[in-house]
Length: 157
Image (cartoon, rainbow, N blue to C red; front, side, top):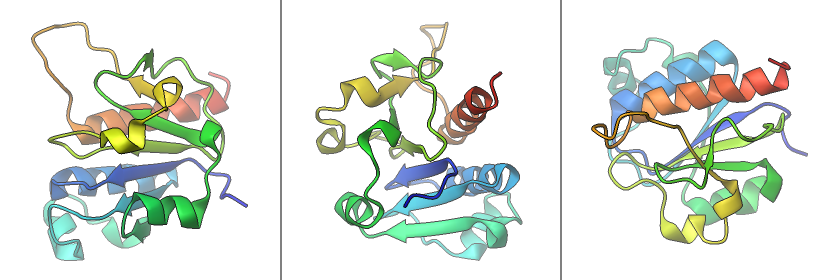
């Protein structure tokens, strides 16, 4: 049985400052943070504390060796998976997020691996940007934005 809370999943995060900021958001919203290895940094309280959060000790953290290990252990339903990519097929405003949803983000430099996204076009979303000048948004900003939108849809606006 899945935990009935939304979870944020970071696949191979590279920047400790982003992971620390996302952890802080998870504490604020009472969400679980799931990290999929390998990481681009050492995951120590000192590393993420330097990233600007003294709340790391309060993060409800789970870690997995790889994507397959995550799937084998969690067994998430397909309709509970929400992948976020710069070129996602749909806006993040589109879904009615499930209470036990997994908000899944890739690493800062390359996003999510194509093997994870294969066959998931209908589960892949983007955060709209109006200006063509900006190529992408900061991972921590996007994760926080998506988490609040997901919670808003659950609360009925």
